[in-house]
Length: 273
Image 1 (spheres, helix red, strand yellow):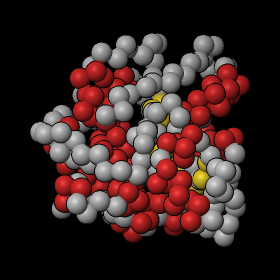
Image 2 (cartoon, rainbow, N blue to C red; image 1 turned 135 degrees about the horizontal axis):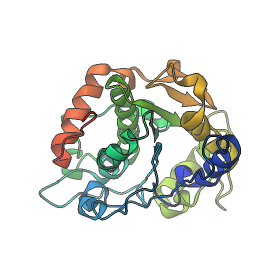
Image 3 (cartoon, helix red, strand yellow; image 1 turned 90 degrees about the vertical axis):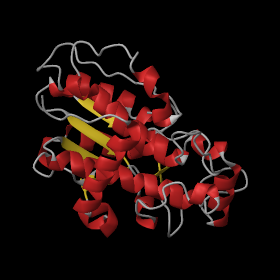
Image 4 (spheres, one colour; image 1 turned 30 degrees about the vertical axis):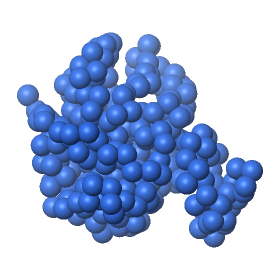
């Protein structure tokens, strides 16, 4: 996860949960914040050098986001894919595949993917992932496409027998909003941001505190009551599959994305030994 993302901000809360709720089961629970290369899967070789998790790994929460949204950033050949899709989905896919052998040792691991309600604005465009080489680029469609991919990834993991959930943390003020003047201006135009960078609630957006936003991460990561609903999408700390856009609940799209992701990263995601 990126260090300024809502997923990263959830680490202290997850640590507190481990200390309070799981101490009786294991006296030395740990959480680790893992920083992956912002280049997405282009930084895949560096991930091979990641130190082994010790003593065990039970949960992966993927919430990376490329640092400066709002401008088309093509990947250099031979990859050639738009960077929102690369960082927000392919990076997660490859990272999870790489650590999955360790996750599998836990017996009942969870994989959580941080998405957004913005997924509703765009499906994964399998025919044109890079927006015609950037000529047809739309920053919100690029972001939304990657968020749809996060949901489809969790749903396909669940279909393959892995306990996985996706979630929408809600609108949270982070420094990511400060890194893109274009996005900031869009928020101002929507009436949910002031010229001074202050948040404003509206009929479209109700801003959350960091604690409120990360609470859904905790539910997705640890709540035993949702185990019977693998692949589900969470908002406001609850399962809300009815809020999914149809394209994000399409099982055929989920399978297609999995196969395409393996092809793009050049590695198989092996679930079982």
